[in-house]
Image (tube, rainbow, N blue to C red; front, side, top):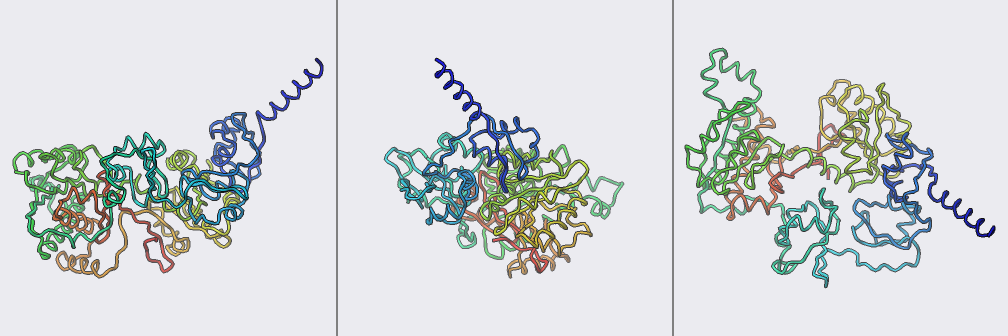
Length: 560
């Protein structure tokens, strides 16, 4: 009896030890990576260690709760999951990246989602690697996500709904990443995989495939507000031009659009173009009246109006056969299947940026103006592998802690999340010092006024090769120079961003509506590029985003 009691005591002691353990944070570890190592949620770790709410520090000791302490013995194999990297896998199983590469010499710089890798010597892998598309005997398809593919494009490729894809792959509900493997239900109507791949979207020169035998019709809805200006005796037209920023944007866009129309006519494209003044104010417009009093039954494309509420109204055009393009707004509305947003929105630009960074390195850090930063929440929800740091309440930042997490031998991306001049200046100056020891590239989600502050020279941003996502690119090709020269000849000034935008949106719309299949089908299957903009409509929203950076010669270049 005493022996049994003694055994029970030993069991209870071992259980208590098992139910809670201590973990010493090593360099490069994050709350997320530690949670994965011990198979416990980040929330449970935070409850047990409230002091790490702003991030874990190297050499600090964490209490790991009893939820799921895992067996310390290393398994033989690991199946690659979305967002796995060599670094995260090596940390999870306590082996070095070099050892991981020796065990798996066939792996390249990136993992293939769904493939197996060895964690011990002599292990035979059972799953096929480097598989593009596999048709299984279980009436399902395994599809590897290629660059720029989306749920929408894949659903069209295989003739299945987006809901069916998400049902089989719940992780896809927040978007896709290149290299993922999706399990798709096989439909008898899709034919062969080879036939389906023909439907993939590709970048094309739309000018080479225009149909010049069929007349098309284009309408521009421009908020000139001519009647209001004419009736307003308190201001002259010159005063309006000096003070009304929205009117200036409209006129610049329109000047670019006219140049696109002229260029298309010179090229012999068969179309008619009409322009209507929408007389828009903040709360009203005459778009409904224009549609009611004019025949839009044969209109192929409408560009405008400029605000979401009126875009939705224009989207009620006949049988949804007329494409309606919102040229400048990037907040997607609910206009319908025929309403297209030509400006990539903020979410798309962030997703494209993060995909680019993850493809280049797993050493991604963020410096936030405060712990309540909106971007900090976005990272913790969608990209928990990004290690975030914060300025404290007194506006002080601990660069020593950042330095202890930077990694030698690889690119360190540091995302700056602040528009406060003093913080931007501090980060830029200190990153320049750290760059003497580490390969560092500064990243911003968007360019803000603080970056143009006179005490932050462009040469410093160039030294850090500041990277950012952009809806436009710098273009010095002969075509771009010819456009600028022709525009200046007509308007006596160089084209600004709105004028070039007007040309790009209008010229692209004309080329697409002059395709054999028309604008709607072209937008679904083809990617195009004009002077400054790329047009890649996915779910009717333009996903054409460039990665731009400050080059050492103080010019802005497109990242490869």
